Image (cartoon, rainbow, N blue to C red):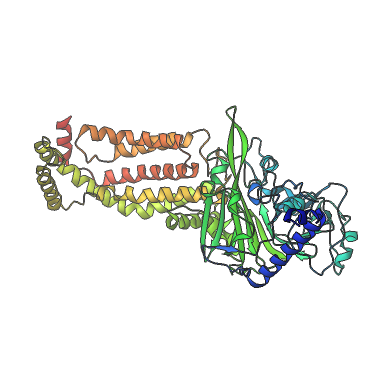
Length: 611
């Protein structure tokens, strides 16, 4: 009998059976003798920690679904069944779901949090003590509902390795309630069916539970009278634990800020080994970077922030032990700008731990330096003072100390300016004396420069000119930079103070007279104009060291240019107030110096001769 005839004797069912048995035998033998052992999920510095991934439904690619976003169920099989997670001996929870979609509110004196039982996610997180920058101002909500609706994800969505299970967990209708102590897991549904009051007043505990008979998810939130919330989550599929993470999706922070735009002030961050790493959206990749089971381990804490507020995932025991794992990415949403549609990046972050069930604390609140420092682990590194932190931070603490005794940060800035200028007054005296000396020898220096002006800058003769000039300085005991030293010392103070004012939430929306926010520009540009006038008066009172009329004219224009920069660039009005106060003090000090150290008569005659 020929081979084709033999094949005809086997039915299609028999061929499928034989192929299935052989395939299973090959898989079992390979798994037994050749399959690699699952890698341990150990935290590693600056390396990716790989956890054992749950098998992904081949019909749904993880790279095509945003982590934490609602994935579309595959048509390859029934929801929640098409997965490679092996069932355990534990019994799966019976189907448990709500029939309605109520909003649940939890609040205390600090915040008002609104949950939806669809996904057990947060739809609003208002910080009661802070306003946004809209007109009129409203209570600040760090959740961005428009962005969250567009990208399909909300804060405290779950991140699972299987996108189909993730979509189910984040779109299911959970039963919500206040758990009762000592209730057996099988009886949870009956005890979660109702809420004793809405809103719930913290301290309070809110729990969500859902199951379709295969996938089972529980979320628990514990609130107290602080900005820290304890979060616990657990997911099982057919009784087997599933690796879970919790994400902050859909944007974060104050969406109403104008300069710079919110997208430029939102960062994801993580702390590892005491070093904080901030990641702007330009350094983030898409969600496809994170495959199933891929997390960055070894972090002390991680989260998302804007200039003044933060959401940080913290270890449950308060010890910076590197137990936090994180993912971070960006997605795009469509926004209208100048009547045109543009793609705007939205930064997102997720956190997990190697332990199951997942448990950690989450801080959602202001970046108040003292409050952040008191947390465990401390988070004061989130307050960004810029590259001049060694100057900005002492100025900030000095302002806070003065504010204890002086009502209003504007008046505290004025007092601090007076103190700094009095401390720098000896340098002003030294600078003034140097200026007088340079004014006295200015005609001699000018004559030397005239003799050598026909030579180019790279001509060796120019070196001879410099030697003659330096010889005059040495003869008169003049330090060429002595006259500018005080100004050079003031510049880092200006920039450091500007960083302190714009980086500390204590100065956000701080009022002084007509100014409503000392961390932002003067809305009426009064301070920049007065700063320009006062600086011009100081320059007029200060003896000129340059004999060249063009240089003298440039010195007169500089105050105007300086004031113009305050109008064009977003320097804080608090910095303008500091410079204005400093200039007014400078006028008084210069008047005193001109009376006690008059310019030599010879210098005055030379000056009149030039005129």
